[in-house]
Image (cartoon, rainbow, N blue to C red; front, side, top):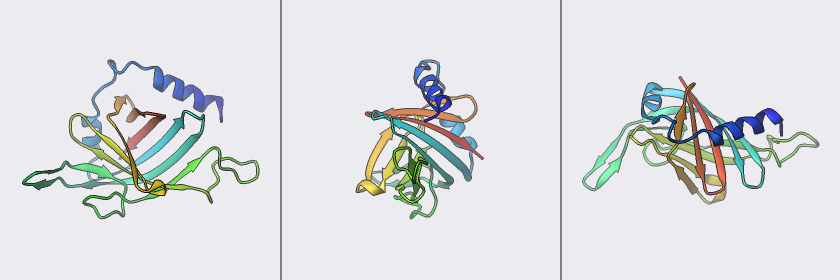
Length: 158
């Protein structure tokens, strides 16, 4: 893994959450469609990369609650399930090349536009397990978050 990538993770992890902004304005600024790039680093020093389009899903109101408006990876059902895309990993190699495109996991992403913003990662390759976190936002469209054993760094753009 490159020193630049590790330095970026160290910087993202070291920024105080108190200084970080709420992500609601950023998520709402994307509008009806945008894109997401995400890198992760887990507690076993394995990095991953994921990129996808994002589409707007309207809020769903029911007598017992419903779901907030959100951005999600496309090609899902647009109601409860995000679309699925490939996530590549540094420990999966093609010869000496990391991030083998023939050995991806499949995941989907949802990002609510509520305050606070909530990110849900659906791990289709792992029985549709979910990782959920409330991210902090940084200048430049960056979101960062932590689940028990993974650091997430995302960038949203129109």
